[in-house]
Image (cartoon, rainbow, N blue to C red; front, top):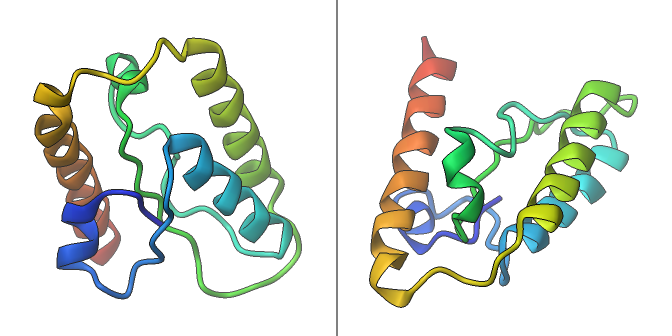
Length: 114
């Protein structure tokens, strides 16, 4: 799931979420409640990236019981982003934030494939 156009352009099979990071996380939470597990932490990267408006999260396509670790991760991520929210970053930084999210996503894909 992603709200990052750069990720979607390279992985067109990703689920597009129209909205900010909370919209992505809420969509992920719904999937976790439906039995999918998170394969990447919603807040990948450094604490300084909490302001990043672009988020990409990988979920397991298999469904099973509700994964309690995934549920905890997504709930904590929602709360953390909510409590940190300081308004959107300046538009001059949006490209940089997209690239940061894309690089974290690529690294997660590479690690998953090894």
